[in-house]
Length: 404
Image (cartoon, rainbow, N blue to C red):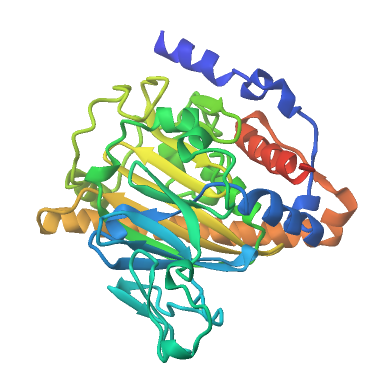
């Protein structure tokens, strides 16, 4: 009976549940056009809630990190004040507009400008002005750091460059926030990161991780863990497309045979109190029997993919139409012994190797769309298993087409 149910499930056409997406070819112009790239900056990245980190990065008063948003030409200082509140400021001195903080992260009670020594506390207030009596009509209360809207959801820090955001963060997240509300993010504080520059458009990065159709081919050593005899090509177990965000649940092959080293590493993975599959603890919304993980994309550029006992994230920051800064982070419960630390390191190395395979494929895709073949054809075809690719591209296009 289960086999018959699976066949019926995998024959479902998820795209047809969302007729507004269409089923036709999709233009490649958004991967190439400088004009389109500039419109993305103005209509998306300057107006959306953007994930920039997590609370545990700055646990104590004075702890900070700097987030560059290169396509918008801004540098943002995220700092925890003495009152415990996390705030965001443009990383610019209010005197002569020099860069204020030059290090990526650290801890500091007072930030001093290297140009003329103006200093600010960790709530952004101007506290010190050398030779203050020579300035005319100086009101230090009005010369603090320029604030940026910041809010927290499930420990994730978001900012919005719009001085007056159209929505609160919770309003922006909508159903996605509800779906992930009970996932135990706070219990998984061991973090391992990879970052670098990608020679591809940022949307190609998003698209590559928005489906598992590619897994059996790009990742031959691990692809069998996401397919079985009834689902050879990564058809979704479940999909839900929201106004901007979406979730894709994917198969975990119960018959997948791990190597001896994989089995040892897996047997020592630190666990958290998450409950069983389909328990409603922020994962596997459909309660599918052979579930492995959920791909959750928070528009425009943030993935928070959840599995049983761990999760991982991606951020894709546009640099140019054909260049992107990417960051991947893996999160686990803190290891309690050497065996669990080994499990972390094995998983970290495995995911690094998988990531390298994906990055190479993204760069080759960018080269392809920019080639004579790409410019002659001008579009790509998407199958039903790529429904979330189509959804993300449509949401981007809808934003770019805004005139307000």
